[in-house]
Image: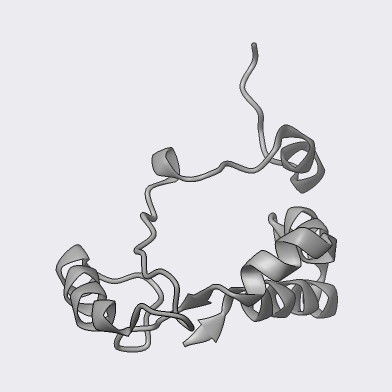
Length: 107
């Protein structure tokens, strides 16, 4: 289990150590962890690894969610799975795509 804020901070630290140009989410992630409201949100959010992986088959995620559901209460307020499909997740804001050198579609 790893706190999402810590995961984001580790990403930023690694990018700064290795060269931010190699890390397309660096600027966006750095801004996220600097925002006090987002910091509070991500300090309360944790990710679980299964078999040393952060992404695993849906059936494993479903079983893990079912096993952990009885823990929901005053300390653990919610358990949820995250879909890794980019179509179902926030995309990098335009201003960061340009900084990261990502090609942007013509509109």
